[in-house]
Image (cartoon, rainbow, N blue to C red; front, top):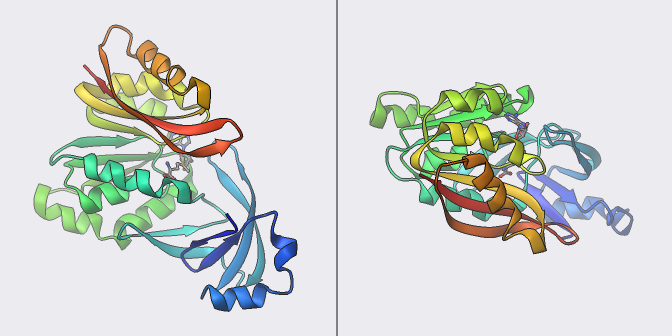
Length: 256
Ligand code: SAM
């Protein structure tokens, strides 16, 4: 991929900068963007990007539109994964009327916003540990008029943003569906998810895994966390290639 467009910012592949030196002014016009930047890394458990602005406005804040929803974000403070676009909409379409949902790694509302926008859950608890992501989560709830709209159906705000650690907060909620949209150490959060999920509820468990272990390791981990509860695997699919030989997959598991 040479570049991706996030709102009015063009993110250029970090290895391609030299090829485009001297042509960045043209790229600004061609792509109708205000800023060209490159992301040199995504760091730590909060997935904070390292960003270098190459041309145009120095502002790294923008509004991105995806699946009909608006996402305000600062690309130097919070990440945006283009590869998860289809998954975000798939989950929104699975939600049935009246569900109680926990989004354990809510970020700026990557999943919570499309769910509340396109479906009709009774409540989405959107837990986020990074105050900067939490700031944009609140902005995006407002920007998409989520709670204003949903008040009519349920008499209360549908998305409840919570700043804190989902490992501690999730077990206090009884959920019909839990989103575990996080990678690398997601398995450490399976026990609190199992504690929270109602009988018959569904967990969407993400894992970065060597492709050859994709059909075994994530499922073993879910079953281990479920202890004596029965687990029905509804699906297991690749969201994207993560690194050579490693995939980012999502397992849909019903816990009885
Ligand atoms: N699934 C998303 C998507 O579709 O693009 C990406 C997820 S994302 C960037 C992961 C988020 O989880 C980050 O915002 C990070 O701060 C948050 N996070 C990490 N550990 C957490 C924890 N223990 N509790 C709550 N949020 C956490």
